[in-house]
Length: 277
Image 1: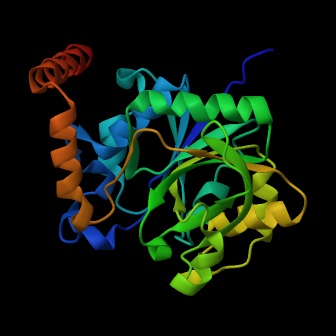
Image 2 (image 1 turned 120 degrees about the horizontal axis):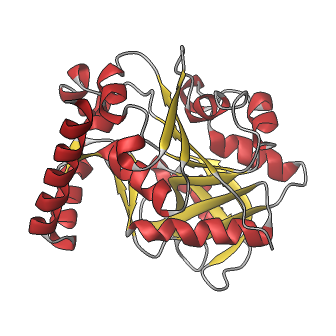
């Protein structure tokens, strides 16, 4: 069987109001975790999965991010930028890729990443095997109200077909999404077929008058499309708000050899300096 070639799409146009005052001056995706901006960690995730061609969706005040990543060559990938003129939700951000993406693609949020990064390979192989319109990565949460959550029909070998999805449910609404007394939330990593764009275009604005990709996935399922969910084996790290940032830093410090990280950063700095003079 011929291996699928995936394109990457990183939405990074959000304003980051939950990270003020930092994000008033610097894109939230530029926040440094162990010497690397968050979006660099996201790029590493995609590269680990063999994704070499990446589109980054940017908006107002994202010049520093574009200066940092450049064409992506220093990070071993090819990066192009898509400008989102209006912020209308994650679904709308993903829709910006419609005119550029023709095959299967991986969406990873620009302020989120997965550790260990090799985890991405599991979801890509599952998508190749099952060939659904979407495969979503899920993790357990205690309070489902701040997430999009999914109900799996049956969990076998760490994955299952998705029965339904809902964005930011109330506790009462979330009850019917429990699987073995657990809530499973979307964690910012999605694998899509390009047909998802058609459903995003048909999705009406939801919470906050934004277009949510969870609603688009639900719409696709209601139209007979198949969606799979895979349970995260590693850790999902969300750098979207101050309440999680310092916990993430602590976790990362415990996971890596600091001296090795220093050597890697110094080698990259030298490579950039040599290339730019």
